[in-house]
Image (cartoon, rainbow, N blue to C red; front, side, top):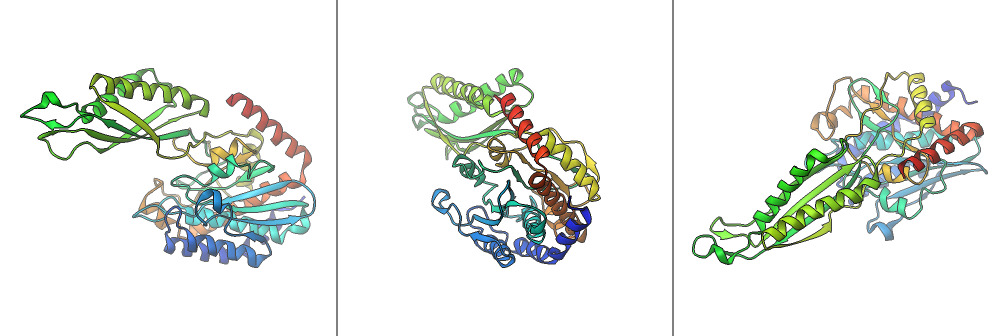
Length: 396
């Protein structure tokens, strides 16, 4: 059994490089699909440590070249992967903390390289860009990139002083709905028009009317992107971007039916038509694995973290898609005692504080410890696989 002190020493050995990487990614603040400098810096660090690096990775199917896969093939045995994110948000930069928890995964991978005489099997660090848009994990999961893994794991930046063993997430579907009517002068001849804007507004009204029958997990949000240019003209075109979330990807089909019926009913009532086009790929909910959550909570505490309860799902992540393909987990690591919302400048700035860097080291120790348990403990690995299969069956 690998002792916690051995893992901590391995993590500390590369901690300064990881801290520099945090700052580099903060300064680059590259948007989804364009993380060239960020991904190159991470891939270079892993290659220098001895990983076999594929960069760019999965480029043809993604359509951009900012993913990477670094592999340590260390004899026969199980296979684990640390997943790394590194895209920023428009305007505010790394307000979701990807510049910290991406390097956290790299640091865990570097520690495993230093501990390679303590396990047999394969360790990967997979760079997964564009999480804030069409997350790269989604097409990777669909194409089987994660299917042969015994564990896929990453941490996500969090705040408030308590870390969590896992991050539950909701499935998500996004559409752009376009309503088509007939333009007409709003005063001289409104009877010749058919208001696409009115149809779009009534569509949203109908969805609101359905809310009282939604299950508690369902969320529906929308914004009006276009609805006419002049008040003296009946709008012949309106566009809405909408998304809905549920606690199971199986429920997405029923919500899809409801949303479309509301749109079609509103369009028909206003003598308009409506079309739906995907705004994003579908994000899946999380298949939670009890054995992984319990061991992660233990490891977080062992490494000095205060461990809080797993929070109800309130957002979405492309790690959910990975969780349908292999045992997966995404703990939350608190980088500051102050409670800060994600996607804010305050959370962004907190990633540069010494407290956040210490939390990154504790998080990397936790991920490395979990990976070693999966690689070295056959009984634990079997329990993880059993819990995964059971949770997957319950998801339907």
